[in-house]
Amino acid sequence: MASSTARVASQKALEDPLALLPCSSIAEFKKGQLIYNQDQPSTSIYLVIEGKVKVSRMADDGRQVVVDIYQPDEFFGESALLNLPQRSEQAAALDNTRLMAWSTAEIEDMVTKRPRLAVALLQIMARRSIDFTRRIESLSMDNIARRLARSLIRFADRLGTREEDGSSRMAPFTHELLAQYVGTSREIVTHYMNHFRKEGYLQYSRRGIVLYRDALGEWLRQNA
Amino acid sequence: MASSTARVASQKALEDPLALLPCSSIAEFKKGQLIYNQDQPSTSIYLVIEGKVKVSRMADDGRQVVVDIYQPDEFFGESALLNLPQRSEQAAALDNTRLMAWSTAEIEDMVTKRPRLAVALLQIMARRSIDFTRRIESLSMDNIARRLARSLIRFADRLGTREEDGSSRMAPFTHELLAQYVGTSREIVTHYMNHFRKEGYLQYSRRGIVLYRDALGEWLRQNA
Figure 1 (cartoon, chains in turn green, yellow):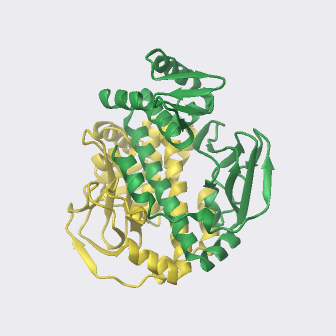
Figure 2 (cartoon, one colour):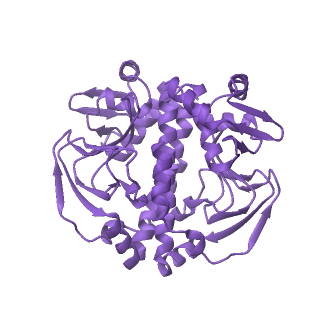
Figure 3 (tube, one colour):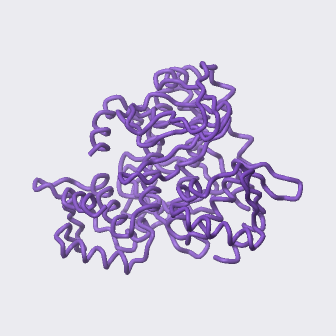
């Protein structure tokens, strides 16, 4: 509860980067298409205009860890600010996706001319830091069932639409993708998704996931 | 190796926030003293002048996850940019520590007047994001021994001094603190610290840790 109160209370004070950025040309990517891989130099920051983007890290053995999923009006690729010779992550379109992109030099130039854009970007990155540390806490302390429950609630809050009955409707994330976010195998995610379905916390099909997020939040509290 | 090359290559292009910030008055904290807790509003960004600071998250059951340890010339408390009614973390002095602090309004004002400061802060936060996602990858994929090895190498690179024989000398981090960073119990950290000591990867005493980081890096590669 504390975090949603915080979100509302702080919302007023936050800058809106979208009001401060000039348009760039739009690039299109087909579902599944790679936007950049981790061997490429880090040269652009992207804004999602339409679709969804999965950013992930690839371990040496080919296993992926999903960093996050970005939706319209969200930025990714901010490592471009560091002018690194290689990104440490890859980005791929989860749906047919349209993006705007700005080079590092363009962003630095705009930030210099429009300091409120800098404050807006700093706020976005401060929020992401909190989000990453929350996930580090969950990975350090929670068992897989709890990690999965927290991840589903987070995706519902971030990417879902709230229905009148209090449930949240989300895209049909594959169990593979959830496993790459939670840090386990697809089989174990399927096991716990079945468990949560039987217990009435969610429904899922090829059309999407319906999550009873308040009930699942209560389950988290009761199974601490 | 890729990451240390990246660090060197990017260093030239990075802005230096310390050259761009005006001095503030200095606050002193004794070893062990709390700087802020997570129930306090988030109102200041801090710079370590002397000493070391531990930032951590506290779970409902009182267990701590160490977010990171900050040393002279490093910032913490950047969640102040979000004007949240509560911080999601606490900060405590690990040694006798001296800090400068700026309010959120002061930082926003300085960023507006000195846009290069904004770029510098954005770069710091982009680097922290990469660091957090690297840790999320390790927590998702590595067993405890590998997590501990990676954490020791990271602390050696960040906080240690390199000796002529290639070893790194660090402060005497307690096994408790390492456990709070790695996400396990103190007993398990002690078990693996003993193991690494017997295998010749490190020495430790109350005076500090000496880490043979290249040898431990090789161990990580061989035990993938």
